[in-house]
Image 1: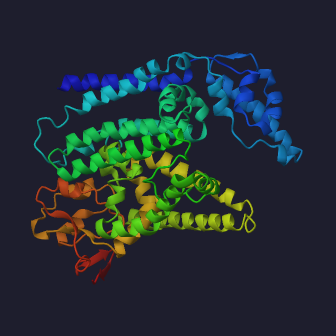
Image 2: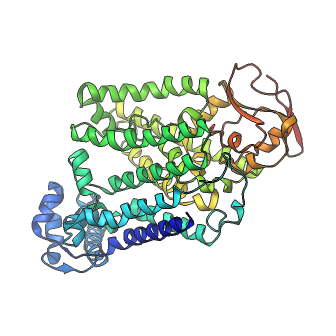
Image 3: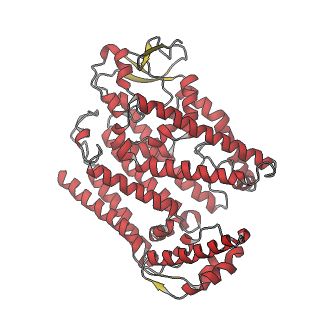
Length: 514
């Protein structure tokens, strides 16, 4: 079996290498007709003249093509700004769409072949490594030397992996033109699902979904015999594949707005933006259902489900961010900081993001109904700041790229506004808690080691104190790894939910009453 795993690693690395090299192969040539077909009519006259020196030239790499385009495009805009001709400045970014349309490379001609030798090969290699895992081991997970792994304990392999993820996310969000070939190889899939050519976001959704599915199989192997973990993993795999990836693309095929029915404001921070509201309102009965459904989830769904089941119903069973963290990020869950300092930072930061999202949404709704007479275009600036700082930098680059450095729930702990909203309900008005039996605890530390949310579970277990924390996502791994059955996830009556025992913070003792 070890030999099969070694072959699997080799195949995976071959696929990853191909995936990393594919963006840099092929030629590019821009023609006047390409500009006319891919540029908005209001910008055509300007860009047809600005880009005319590029027509007919063959560029042997995307670096040269994109570099020449950016030089001419930026120079044109800077000249307009210097002359104070702000109405003529082109704010749209055409680098990606024109680079993709100008591709002459082999990826454009044989997309399935390149998809096969990169993504499919990596998936096959990953499965060859995963399927033999834990084959001859008894059920149950132990604290079995994870801190001695170069990949799982901030060693060299972990640093390389984290750096790769960070670089990929930066290019995806802000320099997608360099990923043109990767997008081209999934074009046929996008056309089949939505009837539209692929964008960088379709590529991302495709890879994101595959990562959850493949690493979900690893979770089945790792937690074999644990029904809760098996069903929970199957749930996040299903919701990601069906609701986050397939269904939104099918809606586009039916000329409906792209919509993820399981995404909830304020995580779906653009839900109340003008273009989203107008898109749903103008899409007939189904569009109105999208709008009403989204509002019901916010006002009724979140409080109701969280009251009965805690935030685990969403964060560990439905959410795509949580799904990736629980599958792809599972090998890094032990890296979460359990210190009191981290807890303090977490509380201020995550609730600060929630306040930011609420204020931004209030401004947006007020401005929408006042026809932008109150704040003008100020909301656009706020949207851009939030989108860059929170939606892209925090949720994407840091949230996933930092798995090998800070654990798998960095975004969920410190940045997700919906997690903050759910956590407030869970902490103060919910039936959910993790009960402990202090008399059985042997202080092995497995529970704290594997807590992805940075909770020192052992501290509570030693005292027989119920764990009622806003940050807990109810993943149940602390219970799964406990060798004595000390911990149990429960949804009991609200009374008795918080123990009468003191919670010690620093040098102060605070007694929590029911």
